[in-house]
Length: 81
Image 1: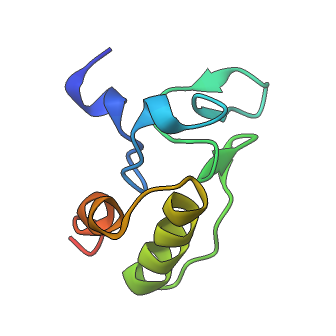
Image 2: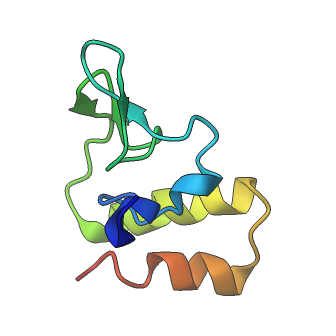
């Protein structure tokens, strides 16, 4: 696993924290670049029109998973870039 494979290349979620351990391709095979919250059946699941929308979504999912405010900020601070 490479340096960037440890995090979703879309939202930045640590892949080891993804409940499904990665998204899926159209044929059902596991995708190691994107998490299951972002990528499923070979397509992105979201319809975000801005990075602000994505940050809000990711922070909500991290909060559901029990992450504190600092980790939610840390894991989403790169998204606008």
